[in-house]
Image (cartoon, rainbow, N blue to C red; front, side):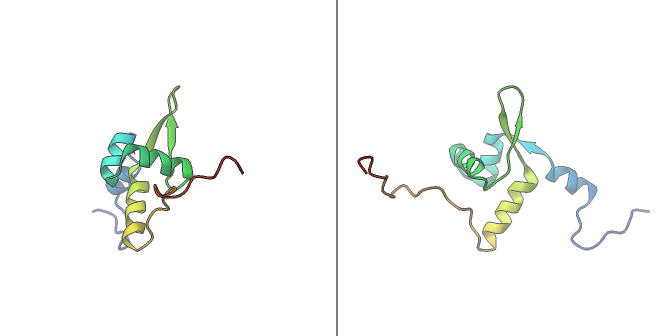
Length: 93
């Protein structure tokens, strides 16, 4: 007989899936953003990144992506980088 679990508590399969690591391309498809946007969010600490291999390739946990999506749905969108229309600092000053 399967163990009883609390409502909302993830099953073992759901827990294992949330720890699955995705490449930058895969994660950007999940979030529907450009890969460079995802890299910038990683650099800004908006989403946690795991570096693997000698090259330091980025990997993203599926659970972190779904958490970011749920925060966005609840009215807390990711903190964006500098808007495209923002003025650049004047190098003369």
